[in-house]
Image 1: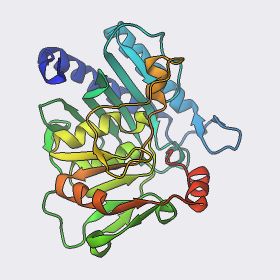
Image 2 (image 1 turned 90 degrees about the horizontal axis):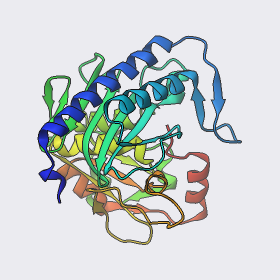
Image 3 (image 1 turned 180 degrees about the vertical axis):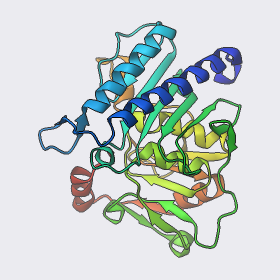
Length: 305
């Protein structure tokens, strides 16, 4: 059964709830914004911070999903999901994307709520305090019904300006090289520190494309559906394969010793999203560097925001 055959009334109900809880979690973050923060780190080298705001947002999201859809699975960046069930629906959560921005008082962050059905994105909602309309809002989409900021329909930019913008990772030259015609394109590079926000801006046409070195599934589960429903495409590249593939489902190498959620947790591949023509052109000209410097860059500047 394809996701397109799912009951749209159910997907509409899921989308409505996803928009509501993304907005409410965003309000929690805004209430905590610029208050003194209790910052802890999830890794020993103090490169992956988490704040009390992350945890408050995460707790709210999980409770709200449990109350409305108790049989659905939950996969959150902060962990602590319920035990596995037979449900084909997985809610993929990033309760605060852009933690370093947030803890430094930069209002470029997001709450990302993506819903998968058999690993295919079918609903996505992303709260941002600053949208392309210079106001707070929720970018959202459900399969086959278009993409929106609040009630306004959005679309990728199929006709770029003379100086288009592209989202490029910091230190990308140590991990990627761009060849061919794409080297001559007049793109202005930007990096905002929040993958979910950057994908949203690609979906509404601000970025012509966005390149990520190795995002996690909670960074992009909602955003790739936004881009698709806004008329764009998402491409990912597996290690050892020459060609980039269109991202339709989040496929992972199956570890029989791990459950379905744990396997999804390990999804992380180079990703390009954006207007269809621009994204298809850039993936033909991107080369991933396989050398010690690239490995060192990936270690010290991971695509984690």
